[in-house]
Amino acid sequence: MSTIRCDGCGEYREWDGYTLVKGCSCLGKIGEPTVYDELLEEKKMTRRQVFDLIDAEREYQEEQFDAGRWEQMAQSPAEYMNDIRYYTRKAEAVLTETGSDYKCMAEILKIAALAVACMEKNDTPRR
Image (cartoon, rainbow, N blue to C red; front, side, top):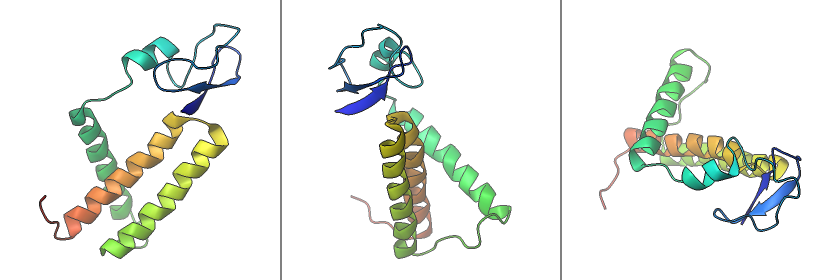
């Protein structure tokens, strides 16, 4: 169960991902950044779309490092885990402060890209 903001009245409503649990009296648009019906239709992304997002985030991370915006790139799994913990806490804070799963997912994207970076720099066993 998550909480979403109604774009019509601005009130927060519980949402289980499929049906509106507590209805909105204004019958306005529901959710961020799309209306409720679009959330239902476009709830899931394909794996390819997800991998494309992660790849774009990895490119961004490398650009930031190359531009000198990061003092040091993590190397060991322990260093990456510290970064992942930082962004996990940030994702939790964003979700708590805004109630927006969509905004939280921006932080989760960073976490996924950091996990990929860790695998790129360290020997990773195949399942």
